[in-house]
Image 1 (cartoon, rainbow, N blue to C red):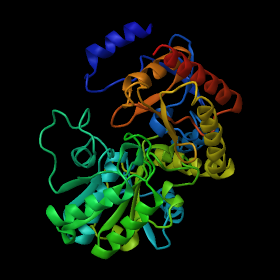
Image 2: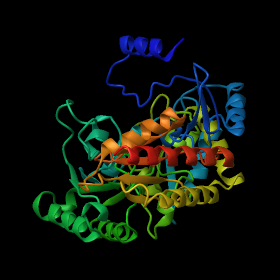
Image 3: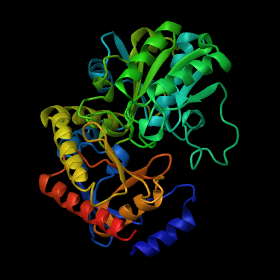
Image 4: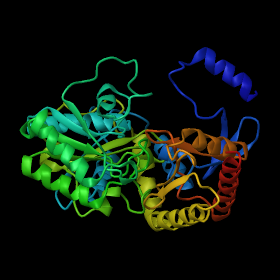
Length: 426
């Protein structure tokens, strides 16, 4: 079966709304490598969009899933509960940042976690308004789209978004938005559009994902926490993409001196199995009444078993430290290319949540075209990369933190060659 024939079948059977970055059809995968249906090998620097921090088919994750399969696959925790749901909640209550008593719920996707965090915040505060940021991404459900700070492709054509959602500029010095300007916009919002006493929550990614891998400045996060405390607003940290050792800490909020009231997580929580969670202050998490939270597949026992194994792997293999080492090595290689690739505008990111941003060398404007040229050149050489950013001019790096050193070195060589080729063609 060729990729061309599979693409023809895909086009005939699947909605075009399901976009595809590549025409690679996976046959098998191990750690940081994928082999397609035609037998070609690729190095995976996408990891299912930050889902596989522990790599494809980590032996401990697979063993945990196989063991669970031998016991039961589904009961619905709300009907017949199971112990490993409880014990995973207990583990997350300890791991999620914040020196206060916590409780957890499990759902299935990151968007569902965000939806539930908003429900919990509204129930706890009795307020309805929510504030998010330009460039933020929080999912493709209607509330997720409303919170997301990018129109194309996420909002276009889907009609009116849920109300009482407001956006302010995310602080990115590179694009002319300082911490002071962003905070001033928030105060202007309170003066002109929404009474802070009507705001239930402010939701923020500690490092923007789809928006371009921009970290929140520490001073801004601290000021945001103080403002939330002043007005009784809950702070929600969307850690769906930043969680589970990706930034060199278990959670990206561990880099900050302040903690969120509610934390959403998914992606790498279960190493490739669908599982998401909301963890937060116990009294806030208890605000909804019985039956107000949950879902048929929420906390599926297969995903729960996988998540236990993922947490074990992160600890046993010291993946937080490894993320820092890999990120340093990647950024050093990118820095070495700065003079030979004048399109490089910025290199950034904590731990192994790294990105390189490109501008047109002549105009100085963001260049999605150059980023895509690098992506395609790398793909042709067997390296899978993802772009992101409001302008589409950022390449983000999301390789498994468990990637073998020799495979990582091979990938860096391909990346360098691809960037040099793209620059030479300009």
